[in-house]
Image 1 (cartoon, rainbow, N blue to C red):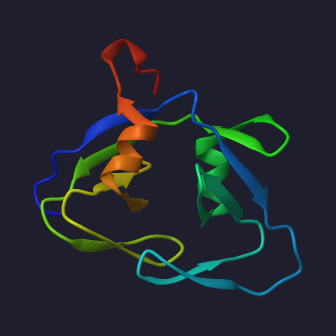
Image 2 (spheres, rainbow, N blue to C red; image 1 turned 180 degrees about the vertical axis):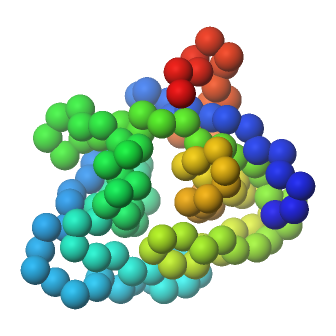
Length: 137
């Protein structure tokens, strides 16, 4: 996405996820999601995000989520996001994610690495623009 206009957002506090760490003696877990093949490995997390199930890289999960109870986690780090003007795709740690015009392209870090995409309605239900006084990072 040329000429980034990403804004900083925070996860709504009342929108936790349910997650389980893949602590199994296994090879890669391969599945189809977001229009392409995805891969997970031992130590990654299976996340149920309000009915949408996918995997998250172990290091990313450890850096961005905090446990609030058995199997429950909240995202504690901000994201940088913008609405896509046209359809495209981003390479994630798990695989390729295709998105449509109007969806959000999101990054877990300010340098726009560690990208993924979320549909507009889902993103706007889960995140809100960060206010200046909310900034702690």
